[in-house]
Length: 138
Image (tube, rainbow, N blue to C red):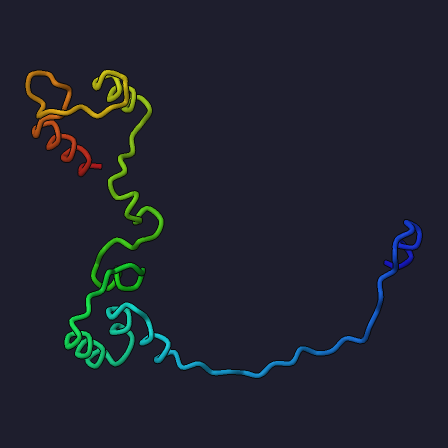
């Protein structure tokens, strides 16, 4: 390595004696760490369930269900990937379906307003039911 650096007129690498890494093992209590979370459901799911739920009930605590663990416990979609709130009402379809919808609303991209009566461009309740039924078949 140094011979290559000399040929390229670059400073040589300095060498010093290596020292081994020094460390000290520290055992953190996972129980206390899990109980320290802001989510009472997450804390209760680990250990000391009765204690956590009793204290939370006495203090009238609520859980905003912001983490993965508490959402799994209560059976909700997790707030990650396509389960994020911003994607919950996302409709996925083909480009031809998009073009058909744009043509139906006049091509301006604005959603129609109305109740579907008198050709106002808005989907009627029957249209919505058909769309939902066809979506559940897939």
